[in-house]
Image (cartoon, rainbow, N blue to C red; front, side):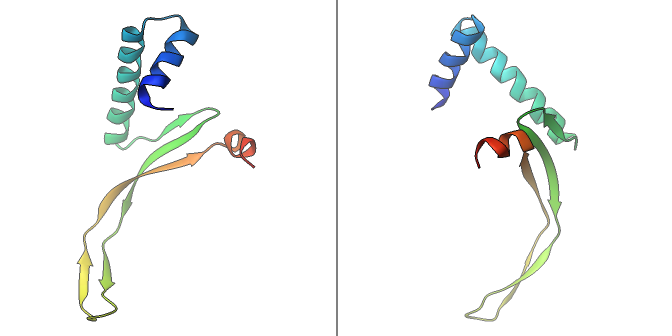
Length: 90
């Protein structure tokens, strides 16, 4: 299912126009992004949780040249599915 199909299906289920549904989805995603940028975790009951984690810097060694490289720290987005969702796909 692509974005257009998802938006149409959601609009049909909610009884909204496609335009209103697109605005609803964009608003939801903007709110989620803002919370994640502030360092807050997001939990959606029955679906899972999203969290921004910091990976520390580390040293990588090229096995061929034996050259050591310093990998800088970075932020990654982590998703953990809920137990209900895990059970459905076992």
